[in-house]
Image (cartoon, rainbow, N blue to C red):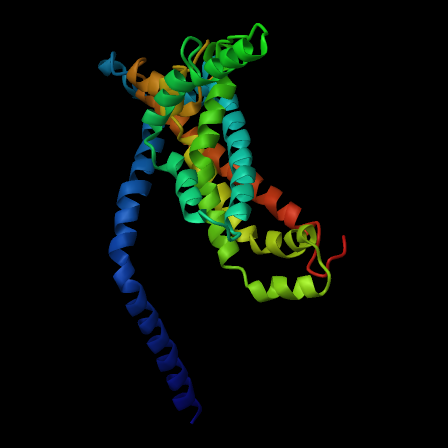
Length: 317
């Protein structure tokens, strides 16, 4: 009798495992494709990073352990690129997240022309990054005929003062690049946050209004907590995308002046395609992944700490 119960339990577990594998089986082609196009190239990149491999000297290729990583960390240009990348990603993601959340809160209200306004706000995300960067460089930042200096000159002529005509790209290159990144990725953050707002149960807010909660209290105790997972998703994706920002740096500043705006993707491009050093470029690429993990975890912990300041009961810890 005991043996039959044991055998029945084993058969049940075997049946559950078989059913689970049958459900997973349709996902196997996608999983295999994902491994082939992402994980295998990353493993190959790690292997290349362990070799001294300069294309101009093919007979000098050799296994060199972690010498490329040491060279990357000692290289002042690469250290500057890592610092610039961290600054651009942190400032760009936080600014795009705050502005995108604010715009999503506005679009979550009902008003005349909301669909048209939503389309206008999404448009920057639909423009190719290279085209958007060139547009900002020539139509907005240009000191001779750009929009900003044109408005300043018009204001000076109208109100009778000597309007300044600064060089926006050469004078503040990092700010110029970050503004384009924020302009490009704010609609992306807005869409994710807006989806979270529209998924919120309106009855909860109605109950809070009946209990006397004002708009700020509703956002602080209800909406912000509901948006936590959407803000985390936006942060992670924003970090990944901005870490790979190359078009803006290449088309606006070419990494200059000096190394003021050189980020890791652009420095990898310079190392591989101008210096022909595949090993050191691969090592820098692996560092991009490490930096992305560090910054993503920092962003997630920051959002979690902000969310945990006020618990569900509404009293501070």
